[in-house]
Length: 387
Image (cartoon, rainbow, N blue to C red; front, side, top):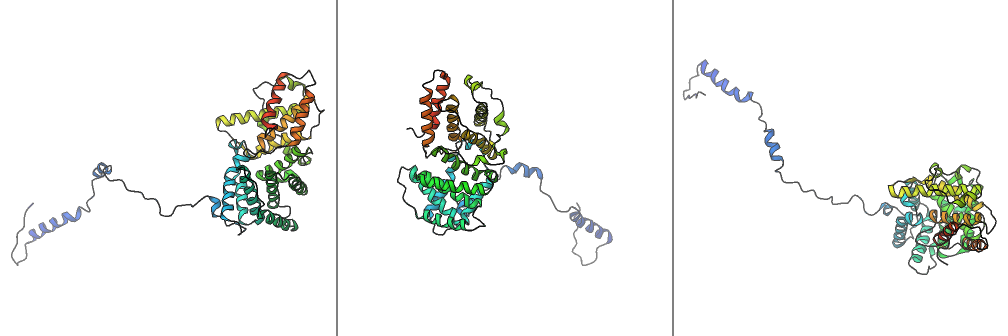
């Protein structure tokens, strides 16, 4: 590249000016310089890792229910904490087959949301959970002021024609039934259950509640539970919508297990209930080993399609049909509705089962296989707690 040296004040000649201009334009025409892409790629792995710090404020504090504003301001933090514990444990504790069921989140949210605006529900939850944990811990259950508030608020709702038959009112009564069962107040169990039966009847029967599976399960537990305790008939079977008592298709699949010989001699309707029970049990066993699940509505239909027909059948005492009916009733109630942690006895079922045994012993045509099955079901599902 030529060097131009000039110290003179005279203008340079045209040839020199052209040379200077071309030299200046060389730098302008090159544009901006770019970094070598290969250098970036080679050095990318050599950069020190960035330190990711957790946010100062966590995204959520506590569980979903901890953000709810409770409808009754008199509810203490300790009582509210018991409700949270009760809600966390209730699904498995109150539904033995919970691991095989897909629960409806909308029903759960509905019950959680009521804590924010239904004061009667709040107090009913408090008194029920307090009784539950006292009994679970082997303690005596003291009289809670929340029980009186629950009854007073419930009377107010029953006096209001707009809400007296609403789901939100009926769920309060079912909680009072559970609380009375926990504490052994059998008079209260009977009175509350008779009341809720009238409310369901005025709503048109059990079919009006099938869209809310959680509430339907509580109603069925109350209705069947009183029948097994007192010996009366369950009330909800008289529903005109008999479609609720048709089992879901998976219960009707033929089981790979052969039926015991004594099933062939059963009453045809009772034999049908046996096959439905066998199909349901097969499906649940398969679901437990393959992590499969059934929907909550199918669970409810499986329950009512067996429990109510069994409860309304009548056979001669001491017959094989009657013994199997009582055994199936105890077995199905046990797997569907019996609480796992707090065991309630049902005197009518236990006494009827034992009396049927005594009469069966006088017969010489009872197959040994049936005796083994009856004794097994009695020990696992009927005489609970052991008597």
